[in-house]
Image 1 (cartoon, helix red, strand yellow):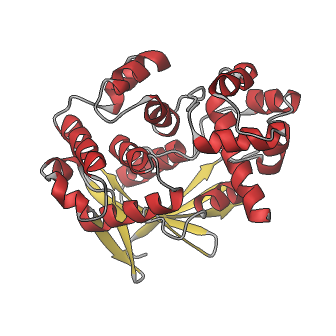
Image 2 (cartoon, one colour; image 1 turned 45 degrees about the vertical axis):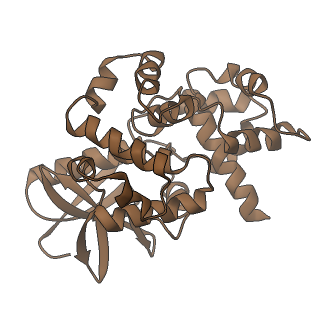
Length: 302
């Protein structure tokens, strides 16, 4: 990187760069960042301009190398990374809870130091959640890549294209046929464009949702939007609005993970899924995230 500056972000005790890197490495089709030799590079928007950063492990936290100059660039990148990796969260209460809970204990011990890796941009979170409805995660990544590479802005660096997520203004002007050409279903195309228009017009904002101050109030507001059900609302609460207690109870991956850790010979019923989470209240998003990770790591182990 030319004209670069460095930033050291000190991480909380117990944070594991390697655990979070492993999570970020889960798909070769990921298009919002690139990983090579233990370094993550990504393009973000700071003060209305694209900024490229690279982050890597450092004995005292995370070392960030930024393309660009000025304190505003540095502050914007730090805000993004802290949000992305949920670095402001004290996980000691969650870890104490998990040691007392037989369903969480093994998952948390194996992946201790993992954070709920977020999606700081509201529109990106909605698009990812909608694309993932009723299809495999692998195919959702393929659709996201097509969407981003078709409508997003790219910054070239070291022979690699780093994409900014498509803007709501650009997507709001599209017709569903433009998304259907990417093999996104007609309904999902309509949902994505509808949400882009709400955000572009200022009717739906991250700040406005957070101002509601209560998960249930936010869920009620979100599920009033066409294409958004309770699962998507709780996914947005978890990954973007940073509720540690969001609980996508209808999630298939969560059901499979609970079947595994509870030793069931069938998937749990929805009432069972709710009952299992009673002891996790206040931390259900973190419990869910760790169970997802545990399920995928068990699959990797074969």
